[in-house]
Length: 237
Length: 334
Image (cartoon, rainbow over all chains, first blue to last red; front, top):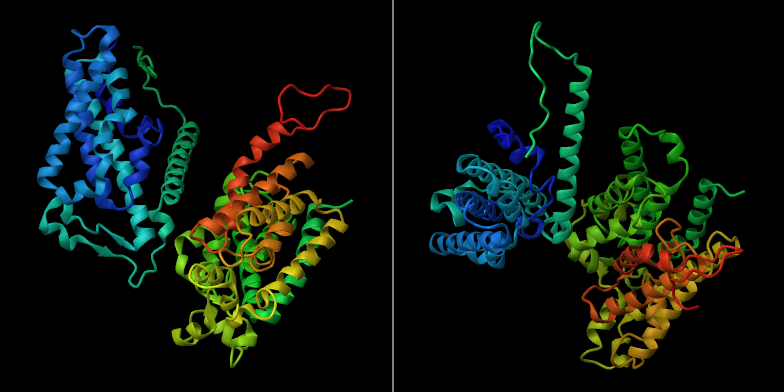
C-alpha cells in the first residue's frame, strides 16, 4: 500500500472529496442547524473536533481490533468524543448548546465521521489519519459556514449575529447589518432554504470544477525535456 | 394543429374573464400584478436562456413563461408590494423551471413554487393584505393610487384601510366562537357566498369550461378535484356552524383558478386519464385537509406541489394498456 500524499489528503478533505458537497454525508445536521453563522460555526467546530479525535483514536487501535468488531469499536470511539464535545459545549457555550440541541449528540450518527474512520483512519498511520480528520472537518466546517452565511444574509439581512454565544462577549459587537430595515425572508431560515442553498452550493462547486477542467485541457501539457517522471493520477489502497 | 405557443395563448385568453372579474370587484391590483409578473417571468426566462446558450426568442415565444407570470399575477394578493411579486415570478422561472431544464422538464408547477416560496417567506403580507371588495370602500383607489401602493410609495395607513383577510380565512377563524348567521353578517360575505369572490370563481369556471370545449384540457382533473373537495367537505364539514360550508370551499378561494388553470398544467400533472383522476382527487383531498386543519387560509399551492411529488408514482401505476398487450401485472385494480 502506498503512503497517501499529504497534498492529496488536504485536497480530498477540503475539495475533491468534500463530505458535504461531494459525499453528501452528514446532511441532517448540515441542513438543520445552518440558519445562522454562529450555529454553523458551533456545529462545524464540534464536528471538526470529533472527526479529528476519532480518526486519531481509530488509527491507534487499527492493528488490535479485528475485522468483525471494528464497526462497534469505531462507533464507541466516536460516541466518546461526542460526549466530550457535548460536555465541553455545556461548560463553555451553554446557550449555543441549547440552540443546537439534539444535533450535538447526533454527531455520533454523522456518516461522514464513521466513513472517514472506516475508509481512511483504520488503514493508515496516525499522522495521515489526524491530517485527514482535520481536513475533512475543515471541509465540512467550510460548507456549514458558507450555507450559514447565505441563509443568515437572506433570512435576516445580517451576518455574524450572536457570535458572543460561542466566542465570548468581545464578539457581541461583530454583528454586521448588511441590509438595514430588512424584511426577513423566512424561507431561507426554514428547511426549504437549506435544501435550495445546498443545491446551489453543489452546483457552484461542479461549475468551478468543470471550468478548471476546461482551462486545464486547453493548456498545452508542459513536460520538461528529458523528464522521466511517471504521471500518477491516484494511489491504490 | 395546436402548437405550444397557440395553446398557451388560448389558456391566457381563457383567464381573461377571471381577470376582468377580479379587476371589477377588487380594483386594479391584479391587472398590475399580471403585467408585472409577466414581465419579470419573461425577463428571467430570457436571461437564463441566454446564460444557458439556448435560442432565446424560440423558447420565449412559446408563451409558457408568460403564462406562469399571468397565473402568478392572478393568484397573488392584489396589493402585494412589487418586490414580493418580483421574487415570486423570478424564482418560479429560475428555481422551478430553468434549473430543471426548461419547459417540459419541470417536476413542479412553476407558478405554485413561486407562490409557495413567498407565502412561506412573507406570511403576513400574503395572508392579511388582501384587497377588500371595492363595494365596501368609501373611496375606491384609482389606477395611480393602486400603482403607488404596489410600488410601496403610499402611506401605510391608506393600505391598512383597504386590505384584510380573505372571506375563507375570516370564516374559518370566526366560526369557532360564533354561529354561521352572525359570521356571514360581516359585509365581506355580501348577500351570496363571498362578495366578489363568487363572481371571480364563476368567471374562472367559465374560462375553464371554454378550455375543455377547445379540448386544450380534459375534464378529468377539474372534475375529480372539485368532486373530491366537495366530498371531503360533505364528510367533515357538513355543519356550517362549525366549519366552512361547501359553497364557500368551491366559490370563495382560489378553487376554480386551481381546478382549471393550475392543476391542469400539462407538464407537472399526471399523464393518463386514469392518472389525472387520481391526481385531481389528491389535490382536492389535500386542499381540504390543509384548509380545514392547517394554519394557512388557502392551500392551492401546497396541495398542487404535494401532488406534483406524487405524479411519477401515479404515472407508474396508471400506465394505459398498449393495444394487443395484456394488462400489466402491477397497477391499481380498475
